[in-house]
Each structure stands twice: as C-alpha cells, then as structure tokens.
Amino acid sequence: MASHANIQDPLAGHPRYTKIRDLNRGSYGFVQLAYDKTTGMEVAIKFLQRGERLASVYVEREIVNHSSLLHPHIVQFKEAFLTREYLAIAMEYVDGGDMFQYVKVRRGLQETEARWFFQQVMIALDYLHRVGVVSRDVKLENTLLDGNRRPLVKICDFGYSKHTEKDSVPKSRVGTPGYTAPEIVTNRRNYDGKMVDVWSAGVMLYVMLFCTYPFERPEDDLKDATTKYRTVLQRVIKADFVFPHNIHISDECKDLISKILVVDPEKRLTVQQIQQHPWYLQDLPAGLDRFNDECLVKQRDMPEVAQNVEEVRKIVRDAMVLPPNSAFANGSALMDGFIDDPEVGMEEDGILESASSY
Image (cartoon, rainbow, N blue to C red):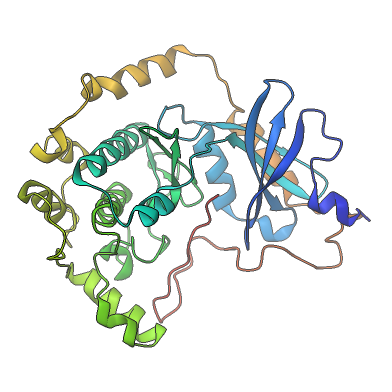
C-alpha cells in the first residue's frame, strides 16, 4: 500500500515535477505549486483521486476542452498525467490571486478599473465561444490575476465546460449560486451555454463595482440559510436587482448591466453586442477589437503544444482504475461531494452544485 507521504506528495520521485508547496484543497482534490524541471517554470497541478468515483464526463471534458485553448487571457493547460493515487492536471501558474479576493480587499472597484477587467473577460469569452467552448461557471473565483501593477485577467477551471459541436446541448443544472442564470434556476432544458456565460459575466461586473451580489439584500441576513437562498433564487428568475444608492456609477454602465441581466436569454446582449456598447468601448486599448482574430490565426499556425484528445481520454480512462496497492483501496476518499452524473437534475429544493477552482 502507498505510504501517507506519497498521498501528501504525489510528485515524490516524479521525473519532471517537484513539489514546492500546497496551494489549495477541497472536496474535489487539491492543488500544488510545482517546479517544472524541463522548462524551469513554476506550474500549478490539480490532483483528483483515482478510482471509479472519477468516472465523470466532467473530468474528461475539463481536460479535453482546456487542452484545446491557447489564449493570453486563459490559464494555459500543460498536460495531464497519472501518479499512483491521482489524476494530475498541470497548468500555468498565475500568482496574483483571484478576482474575488481582489475585489473583496478593495471593497469594490472604481468604474474605470472594473471596465478594464470586464473588457478582458469579454475578450476571453469571445475567444472561448468562437472556438466552440462554453464555460458555464464564469465567476470572480475562476478569474485569476497575473501581475500587480495593472493585472491581466486569466480565466481558469473548465470543469463544467462543454463544446458546442462535440458535446451534447447544455441542459444540466450546474454552476455556482449567485452567478446562475434564470434559465438554469428554472430548469429550462437545452439552454444556450453562451448566454449563460454572458449572464454570469454581468454578475461579475456588478460585484466588481458594488462588492455585493445583485440578487442579495441586507435584510436577507436576518433569514435562515434556506429561506435566504430561496429568496435569492426568486429574485434571479425575475432579474430583480437594484443599484446601490451609496455608490455612483455612470448611466452608461447601468444601461449595460441592465441589458445583460435580462431574464429572457434571447433578449440578453450577446458577447458581440456587449463589445459594441458605448461603456465597453470607452478606454478600449487600441487593437483589442482585432485581438482574437490574430490569436486564432496564430493558433492555427502553431504546432500542437498539448496532448491530443485520444491521449487525454486514455489517461482519464486509466485514472478510473484504482491500483490494488493504492492507499485508497480500502474505500477512503478525499473527493466526497464530487459529481458522478453530470446530466442528472439537481435536488428538488433547487440547491445547485458549486464548481471547484484553484
């Protein structure tokens, strides 16, 4: 049986990676910062426990979809590999923390800074949607910052992603409470994943500006957790939000948010329409409107830098088999709460599963 040390340091003896320190831990697994001896760079490696509980198409989609992406505003996928105990996913390490903590520490952002971040999020979403990938879990916690003076945004975590051509039409109720679009809350079948991403981006912009969620109220804190949650969901399905009176933002910004947080996805602004909105266009860096055209050309001309789909799928299939001498062979697990069936509807009380990010 593998030792406790091998569980805590699954990179022990690995020919390419050496553990530096732990970064994060959750019910899905854990993430470590590691040194890549091949490139001399630091990488973040997510570890998911091997075995039958890993038998979820979410894991395969996360790796397959992420490995197909190459963009400055998306955390770069490096490779997937197996250790004795874990399926490991190596990614670009981004050292600036996530947008949630950034906004929380500053108790909200000035409109100019929020626009700078939002422009980058839209560039990333435009790229994702143009290559056929929808995130379905756009949120501040899945948006990392690279650099300190004027940080660059990098989208991470594609655990709930789908490819619009290769996967089935989005229909499962996944996402993160607070960012979830009305069509998911009401269990609308065969929804448009792109418009779900747009809604979540609108919530992000609201939170960046006001440091609170659009569908929460101060009086909700007096309610028990279940009642509060149901109240928030009722506001979501009606797009019932207000702009705080104590924080001034421009009428153009209010107009944009009001046209994104729209119940009917067919009446919601698309990414392309957002990119033509006057508020979005203000202070837009020169050439940013052509940025993704150039990225797609470069991506087509570059050789494959990541594993191909067949390699990824084989790694995931092999990861479902737990070695007989594994430390987890006796049934112990680190992944309680991991979703086994991605297309099964959520519980009747409407509680949504929350995605994991590093």
